[in-house]
Image (cartoon, rainbow, N blue to C red; front, side, top):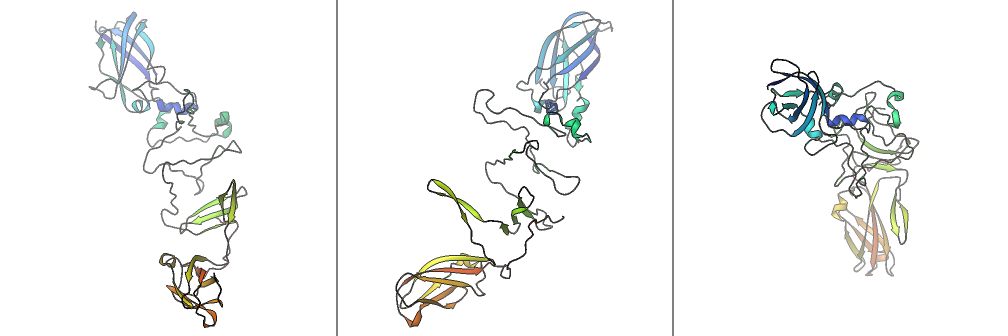
Length: 368
């Protein structure tokens, strides 16, 4: 017997990505399918019939990537069923279902043609490339369960749900050269927040390799990376040239069974310094300045050398200074052969004139 399905209504909720809009409820990869089955003369049929539903990624040809046989009861030609598994199965994931699909129906070994194109339910259109998810709803409306956002992406799998130690799965994966673009339509300051409903929510950033931060990527102004405290005051910053400042320079180091803080010496001017040791021979020593250090400072202007003799002598003094070396001699024309330590201090190259530069306690952004 030849069969016909005269009318079909397919509500294609097959896009698994729609489950993202369910705020944790999750949709199964199923869609409803209704139709009217008649014989070749258009007479409605009654009884139980064997149906097979197949999903294809092309209108003709190809191989079905999903197939589901079932027996349906037809009354006065009408039937109603769901197509798709009650849970995600291999080969029927979000990637498979987020592209154009065609449904093929077989009734009692007879394949009906042509295949029928499946279309997304209207609210799934917001997931199309280039689409917008936007609203002017208040937090009273879309702030249910503390999830005060227009779109909530939820994944509660923590790696221990199956009794194992697998790492937690990401709730959202973004693939693309530009990554994520965050725009604030009110001003130029876009933001990322941890859980705004918790006063103790932390924000973590993980990387299996480098983390790089590009300041002033379009080179149109001076870019800063700033750290502010709870009062909004800047406690540390670095600019795109590497200049930085802080309320306190300190490092944490291990000291036996304790961890202690060490603090940096601060100066009214921008000095770099180097340390070394040398020896007098017949009361004189010419000390070469380390070339790599010399490239970071200005040795054309006056620099400082501090000397500490390590043996008995009449005392030491700096007899001559050049851009590549300095000469040390014993006082009184002495001829001692004695070791000594030295400390060389010079102005940072390019910052020779800076001294006690004024700094705002609340450094603003360039456009504020």
